[in-house]
Length: 56
Image: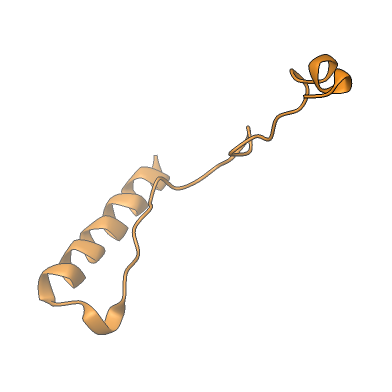
């Protein structure tokens, strides 16, 4: 490390995620062509639950 690196170390970082990141909490991938009946039913239930939450 050079002399300048010591002075600026605390200000020299990269945030991994934005501070005000808003997500729907879903981090799954869904491929329609690989879905079976249970997958489609689970997706339908998930969407219905989301609608109920948004109505409140």
